[in-house]
Length: 249
Image 1: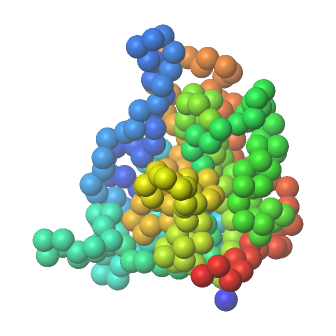
Image 2: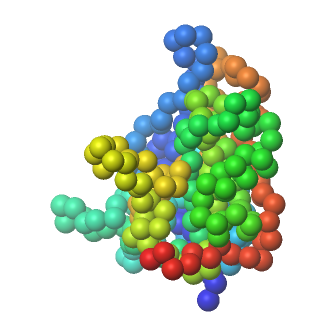
């Protein structure tokens, strides 16, 4: 069975996206919005990467929405729910660990070659990132978007979405994609990861902020209109093929 679901949470209070604001030095910077306690939740069925991408596109248009990997626990009040993987103080968990056919990779701040502007040629940028991932991701279709820090903070800030050949859970994804490369003479916590992806988005309750940033009054772009910073579309590849995980687990 190839079908899966995507869990969408909608904030009942504050927006769930970054804000672009004027900085003290006369430029612009990003700020994270306030924490949210209560959400409404829904699960949307998807059959393949194209359907997954369509859900992401719709969700990205609403600054009050985010994606999580977890499934909504039975009995949860979906109209007013916490974002919680574990029970606490007699309050039950609202999200359950769920293996997924889909995966999102967040790439934040990796160095770019000289004179490489990632916003000018998105297709080249996606190819640059995919070359740093396991080979099964090199020639399959993916959805991508530049994230809220793109063009503002140094380095590359982009998100890629793929469809896997079988569901993988948090532990499997971390074993496969979050391993660090040993560096002699350095403590393990300072080692670099083999692949440039943030493993936080593999966890059950971690919000994945797919919505476009909010541009506050007075914020002006340094390099180009902010409306061009956000790209959300397909990259080249055969959409009928899924990324094959291989035997890494």
